Amino acid sequence: MPELPEVETIVRALRDGGRGHPSILHRTVKDVRVLWKRTLAEPGVSTLKRRIVGKSVTAVTRRGKFVIIQLQPEYLLFHLRMSGDLRVESVRDSKGLAQPLQLHDRLILDFEDGTRMAFNDTRKFGRAWLVADPQTIMDSLGPEPLSHELSYSSFHSLLISCHRQLKHLLMDQKFLAGMGNIYTDEALHLAKLHPAMNSENITLEQAHVLLNSIRKVLREGIRRNGASIDWVYRGGDFQNHFRVYQCTGEPCPVCGTPIQRIVIGQRSTHYCPVCQPQPNQV
Ligand SMILES: [Zn+2]
Image 1 (cartoon, rainbow, N blue to C red):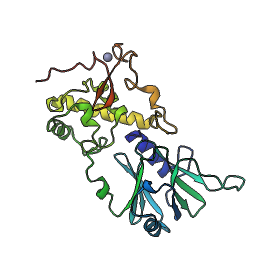
Image 2 (image 1 turned 135 degrees about the vertical axis):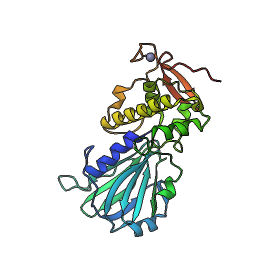
Image 3 (image 1 turned 90 degrees about the vertical axis):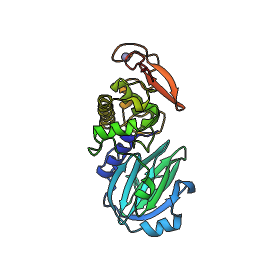
């Protein structure tokens, strides 16, 4: 499942070009095709068409795991969920022949210049919305972990105000936006905190180390263009640099102890029992 670094990589490629395709900035929408009806959460197909045909892409940004495409004055939002991806290509190949769509393409934006953006989604859980205000969809999202607006003391206050296991809490999008299974396991190992530790017992110093660790693994994930693992994702190689995620039985990169796997909140959790000891819970 794509997490913050994978979504950020997709956003940067749509904005600046990359991952083998050009930027979509300043391209004007000629037509929109919805090939799987449930992909479009809001509004209906005919309304979407009426509102975006003739509009140009003025910005592409990210909030949490959402891709936000600005089509002035509205916003087209995508949530990739399990297996969504966005690619840009020419409608015709170098010989002038029509390029066929790919299996699992769910929504297509055709641009006036002969290119198109395709939302491909094998598992069909991904969703798109056209809204005047993105906040209406993303209202409940927690702070951005990479934002300077999130201070160590406010992160500590948020942690101790909850009575939740760290692993579970960090993956909660209402608590912190963008983290999933991979980057949570990696960050907790780097911070030397047990994934089942109760958040209300964390010290200010531990919260400081944890936020730094989260930022470090997210930045490394972005630098490596995300991780290509168990979902359809092109390009990233962060999976070759995991410290603990899906490394059960392999030596901890710090102390050599075999990495263990436990289940927290129904999610596989990987940690080092020596570097991340279970604290004595009161
Ligand atoms: Zn270790």
